[in-house]
Image (cartoon, rainbow, N blue to C red):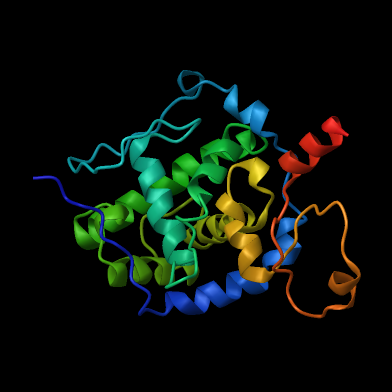
Length: 235
């Protein structure tokens, strides 16, 4: 029988991480690397060696990414969702397609970090198997949060290089990027991250009322780089 990936809940300390990530949003959004969607999309899946955990467990997520294999992609989804959990009326990392951002980045601007991710994901798998006899994606929410806490404190066994803390911090940084960078890079689906912080995107103009307002921008539409470039070409 296949194990189903548990649906995350919000009644955990992970909500504190939501506030922390949102507080880091604007600075991270401006520091994202210059990866282009076109470059990432043209990287074939076959051209990148795939890392396999070798576990006997299976899951319902069937996807071959630009770099990540199925197991790694599902692990990244679960991990980033615990870093930035969804809540009622508030999108989380999964809703914002953060895993897709990371996958594309690793086949584009962050190709130099592929080995870092392979080693980190392998160490994460070893730690979870040693502690719980299951892969991270199959752990309960409480167990997943315990793993994150151990990594954040650099106490998770099974890590050498990268250290548990280094891998945790890298995933945290890339989660922030995937949440709050322009959707053209593969994350921030439907401007989920920008809507959380009231960021207007690449608006062609602002009204007098917009300029005088001290409140978060809420007027539709929020415009990303792709839409802005399309409008410029038409003009």
